[in-house]
Image 1 (tube, rainbow, N blue to C red):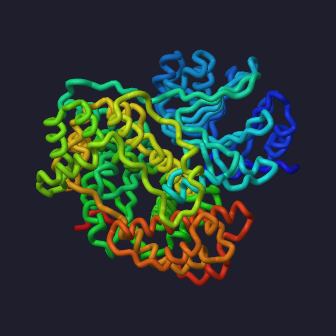
Image 2 (cartoon, helix red, strand yellow; image 1 turned 180 degrees about the vertical axis):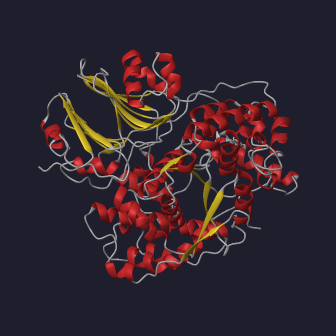
Image 3 (tube, rainbow, N blue to C red; image 1 turned 180 degrees about the horizontal axis):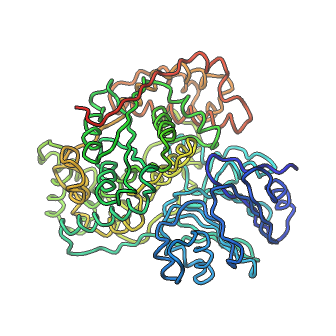
Length: 627
């Protein structure tokens, strides 16, 4: 069998661990580039372990004792180096090799960063594979006959296997039903995604997995709102400082919301001048005045001293923009915003940007936990529950007794009813029920677990995967300062009452960034809703969607009721909620259909279908100073 080179727009490593020297392991090993099989690829073979990696992967130097391959970054490197008595500028892979020799797998709990890594001790024939706390980098494995094949990026693992995997029906069914895939699943049968904060221990006896971090319920009692804001402010400053690169190489993906505005404001005022971003990139929607944030973006950019570049795209082109993502990464993007995000990323790359900071994760991080109502009622705290029901964000609408009663009825139960699958779906219920994800958080009250799962659940994983892969297509690295372990642990320790404010959502965050973000943005009581933009893009993409989904060869037809795809494509949904559900359903179906065709070795779209669809017009503009 011919060895396949590691091919990925991002840095990547791959390998096989086969302590039993099995036939399955030998077949996979034969397809790994060891020794170097392509330009920029290095390799190593050490008994039970064989490895390959590309340029951009940090590798510990010879003489370190332990071998380390690092995909990503460790942000608290100077602190770890000081603890070990090593130079503060020591290479990250060498530092981790020394730390592993001293602490073993316990070092993982001390790390702060976005990474997947391999650490190997050749003397003992043992080591670890691990993924960072929040899933900032990927890690995938395939088990076969006692051998473990692994890769930091999914396409490399698929290429290593002697046979292309078939679709995983559980992943497909859950994606179509809920837009989520169980934590350890991928769309490729037999290939698992290693969950965040998970370590695989490799040794002569095989492979054992364990979760090395889960947040715990450790409330900070007695903190006032101003004290909570001050603590959060310091940690936001630290999180931004950790992730910024050189100023000329760092930019902000900027919207008119408080999350990316917080990142921009902190970067402008707290970073040394040589590390401050000078550029921002934004999507604008003049055709949708209720959504367009161009005036707010201009205010933020002018205040933070950023040169803001905006892109306006005509409706449509969402599926076309997603095709490079699908064919490269063998997975569907979970968001339709690639029609403008791809343009912004390419423009940033042309401008010399290497790192793009954003505000992802801020919504969940400081949001209120509505199940706190049920907790108060269950404990007999009726007056407290009634008061709490009146402190939900009203966004400028007066609180009434009817609104309080409505919230008590909705959130007064112990748990919400499970979301219903899509009405057009036709799959076995067993596929939707048998594969529940492991909880991502430790023991605590139900309202606290609701908060923790909202921060650490599928949404966080999808943010990291989609943004990392999208940015890599343009040669850029995405980083998310608000998805920071220390900041998350602090937010989860705050009193839940501090998150409830009738004026607006996320009051702790708004207080924390006072002075960093103009009040026109910081005190804005609501955030824009982009559903109308997505629905308009779906309308424009309908000819292409029909060509794809009504094709007699369509794979997703096997998961839908007879005639349901045609009815969905012909539907003219009215109302915002109905339009959102309609557009989301078609997006999931279309992108998954493309993935299934790639897996089957088929053309994703007939050439005539692509050439008959006009590429939407787009234009760039400078936003700073816009009134």
